[in-house]
Image (cartoon, rainbow, N blue to C red):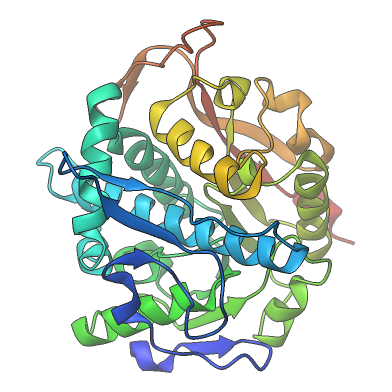
Length: 358
């Protein structure tokens, strides 16, 4: 099996810098690379709760807005990983991720009070991350057995190459816009020396909003003639409808018959101001910094949404729409306060028909 140091990098010439020390006190993710507006974690005078407050700054240019957007992408990656770390401590855990805690250890003093505050309003905020992650884990394990090429888009601090035996024999490519996240993950996990379950592992730094993001995949050994499993975990809500459509169209072009794509789609309750506490809080922070919504797309009927434009066979693998039990974990949808709209999620699996073979 290859070691972690064997993982290849496709960075378009960008030099990586170790940033482990940069996570201690601030979410100031790339001060060594370029100046930017930071999002400090500061303790209030009369409380032990950490709060996020944007620093006053002149109006953002498109370039600086992109930098701030990348900072928030890194912030949400750490939030997700912290929730996975919490889930991993439960006896009834739905996913086993022993790497989540080491990856977030440096930011835990800042994030834990905020997670505790969220939990006061929304009990067990880790439930969504756990259920979503388990559905994706199962989809990977139950994929078309001929698929040996797997792409994680918006991978961030994902650790499946180290924790899923179902990826044995695969070439896995992780794509994210943040080289810093990949470097942090590589540095932390190198010290742990975990076993890779895959035959080949590549990190690809690219922005899904860029028109040529697929070039990084192709230059890292991605083979469009082989069936591929595409994982779009937790990214579609951050893209506009047009960007989601363009993304799926590109995936279609790059996919051989027999390929599969998995994604989670939030319902429109997510876009309501008083929606799910965890998501609302992060969205409020984003609006203060950039003056726009962090969450840009949601749809209640996925069969009439962006996935329907993909000429593939589509199914809903799981739905967090009604009260119910998922993998033994109870789920109760949260209603928005004013409109009483349930904050729902659908987990979609689409398969490219083999009938397309010549």
